[in-house]
Length: 192
Image (cartoon, rainbow, N blue to C red; front, side):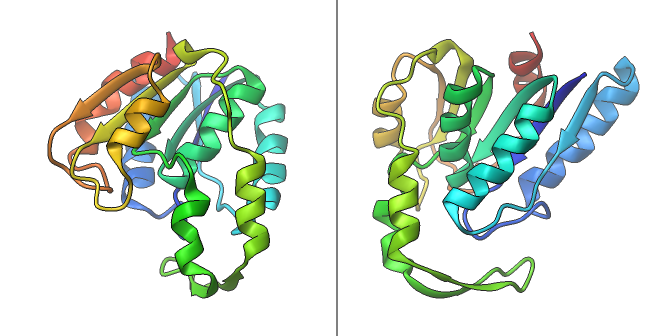
């Protein structure tokens, strides 16, 4: 059975809007086409190194892993696609998240879970350690970008992911507006 893992962004959760849209879509799709697709949204721990341990264990246990990652989750999904040679859809993915998150060092609270933690310089080092210098199999990735992303520079991502399948929409924002309409195409990319 194929398993789709949705990797949420920084300080987010399985309750995020896109994660929930995916859950509803994949449940309906599996009902209509027979139960051939499993969907999982792990609550990612804030430490990148620990998140990688968590995700590698989950993905290694799956027969046919497929990834969807948003923002920091897109950064993680890119790395994991490289490690496991599996398909990944990256939604407004971070390219160098340590450059952005350094501004948030210190105490943090997850608005979804209420969890409190401290973002440290060590976490920035952990992010750098999973940077992919050269994408081995660009055909395994599909990058979705919106130009009005207020958090990440879509030009940086479009340059970094050149050679990968890519869709750039004008307008939008970091949440990737109207994401639900992309789910049929995302499913087709991941499962064919």
